[in-house]
Amino acid sequence: MEPTVTLARRFWAAIEPIHSVVYFAPEPLEAARKTGLRGFWMSYFAGRVAPLGPLPAPAVEAMTYGFAPGIVARAIPDAWKFAAPEAVLAARLASAPEALRHHVDAELLASAGELAGLLWEGAAGCRFDGRPLAAAWAGVPRPDDPVGALWLAATALREHRGDGHVLAGVAHGLRGLDATVTFAATGAITRAMVQSTRGWTDEDWAQSSRRLRARGLLDSGGRLTKTGGALRRDVEDLTDRLAAGPVERLGSTGVERAIELATPVSRHLMDTGLVPVPNPVGAPRP
Image (cartoon, rainbow, N blue to C red; front, side, top):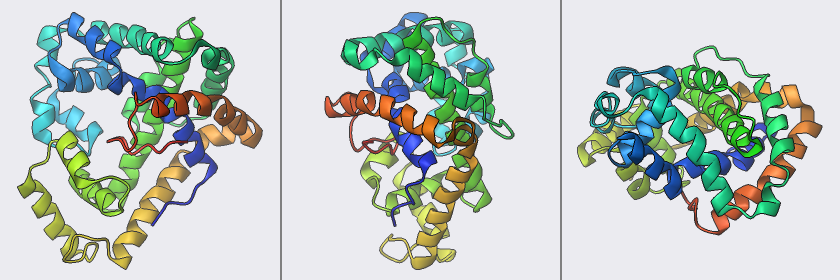
């Protein structure tokens, strides 16, 4: 049931925790609070879409795919009454590198400039067809600060992969909740963790399970059937193929160097407990 460990997947696993400090470290949440935003989820959704401007809830629901519409609607569009997208973006760009510096030993960040350069070179290989979040983050001006440039590059690349993952799920006929239910059924994450953090009710989950059983993807115990397992592998394989642009741009030597530099930083973030394992993002320890 494990997805094939491609170079694209290893690249993502190495850099995802660097981006994810924005969700787990206290500094970004406090910075969002100072802009006027209220609570974690308002900060989360407003922060992720801030480069795109004051979007309405349906647009944010479409891009964040695996989240229940209700949890989005409780945050958007009310967020824009409390803080302008420009202010939210500025707070995120300042607080994420602050969090990295606070929670990562200085010697591990000594190569931030080199790693940022590699990631931005990889980002130059991205295509943005059907990838609004990635296009928006890739268009944010690169900070002069190497740690800030590193976080932003990691963010653009993970949103590129994430947008591609949505495209892969949709191409295989999965609604956002169906993708979540089948992901939990792989055993990579528990239902308790992902259901609560994505805002789905027990009835939502039951309806999705019935749909998936009707398609022959789940058995009566909620486990993936052979067909369901094959579909999940196909989704992950397509996600990797859609994320191949940065890998092709860097070449195997460049990607391996980026993985070499990023892995100690990401492992530190996970081993110290700042980015938990397992986590709702589904990111493994690299």
